[in-house]
Image 1: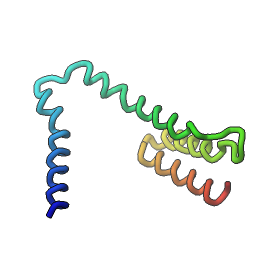
Image 2: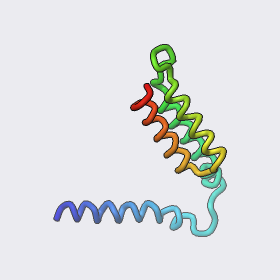
Image 3: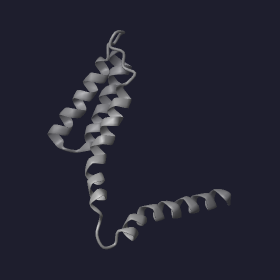
Image 4: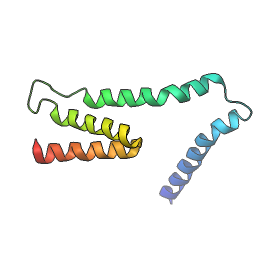
Amino acid sequence: MSAALLIAVMSVVTILLRALPFLIFRKETPAYITYLGRVLPPAIIGMLVIYCLKDVSLTARPFGVPELLSVACVAGMQAWKRNSLVSILVGTVVYMLLIRLVF
């Protein structure tokens, strides 16, 4: 019973949070919101890349090779397919195969 209530409350809150921008900006979206919508996604991706690579040691074996190959695969797939989901999936699979089977 408590789990169902918890799920119901979380569902309602999620729906409200997703509907809130449409309720607030019914007529016209302010310029600063449009600007943030344009610049935040690349900034967030950049921060995630920095966070993922921050502990890579270039002075100890395997010298960051799996990480660099995976980043290259993600960049190559993104340039080729222009699909973020496929690019991230391929990079993750390449990284996991490299650290489990090669290094």
